[in-house]
Length: 307
Image (cartoon, rainbow, N blue to C red):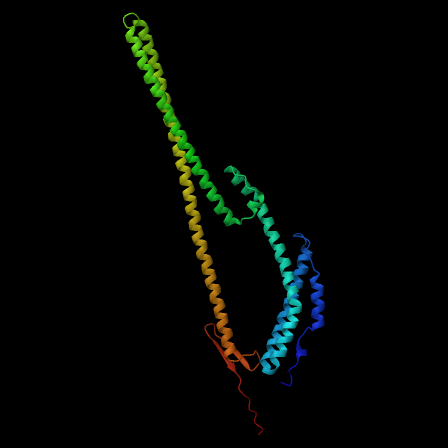
């Protein structure tokens, strides 16, 4: 208790106020201002170092005497309150620049994204494309590509139906025309046998042309269907690949979170172990770690013989 003194805090209040005032004026002009960025980062680190030292000193003083605790905490909070707002301000300035860097990185990917949406006939704004990260853009472009394929398939079906309807119309017209020609031939059969034969040859030629056109139309429709089916199958395979990749990424992230959580829990248990055994970092304590367990030794007393 005789050694307890608020004056143990270092640096002093005036020094902290001076440092906070100076650092508060630091700025970063833009993403290319490396010197400004480094100056702000150094200021933040210096303030953080001072804050950590103040809090460490406060903790050491609090453990020496309960009666001294309130005064220590009060001064600790007062000193931290001087620099912590500036520290946070500098942190916000750095985060602002980091966000600008991320935006520049997305701008570099803008031509690639523009090409993908252009291939689908879409015209979103650049701001909209830049508002999405890589994962969000992947999901969005996949949905748009799916809609594009569905629309294309719908158009192919409509065209195929139109061709079938046109074939049916031609067939009916040919049937009607053939019937008319038969009636005409029948009427003039006796008198115009030669004309009948000529008309019959003409009808055969036209019939062959119609059949050839029908075969060509059917082959074209078949080719279009095969192409559409292939595009749909390719899209399905891509979706499945992305789904499997997403599952793998989610498992990896979950495992990293679990390891991090276990590490935090272990650190909390170790801190509690030290606090429960009143460990204060002095030379009266010895920590022995064999890799599997930690043993905390405490020197109880020393007896010196005068004989």
